Length: 161
Image (tube, rainbow, N blue to C red; front, side, top):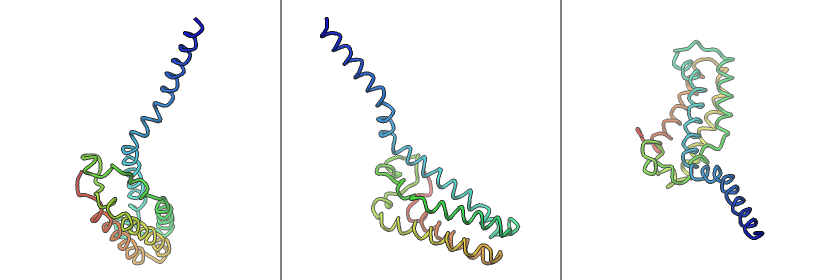
């Protein structure tokens, strides 16, 4: 009788441990989905933050030095996040069709990908320095930033899912 209680406790213990580990195992198995979700969220934040700057640069929004400075500083802070770390193995477009536009070139040439991201950070830093110098200076700095964004997208992002 005593042996069956020990085995019963071990059985319940094993079941309990499995239930406690299930979320961690599920999270690990779902790491690719979570990485794609995080990348998408990050890019949405970048787009949202840069939107007023691009609007002012194009003349669609009235130039406002204070707003431009705030948005540029936020953008610079976003570029301090290690975005390339969100590109975990197994999350390229061929691995996850319909879920991501990330091209395999990211993993085939990680140094170029990192350098491209680092350049964006530098361009965002330059933008912070330029935004208070008027609409023309803002437009020039935003234009450079846009070219940087486009360069990364053309080399590392598919046009569709």
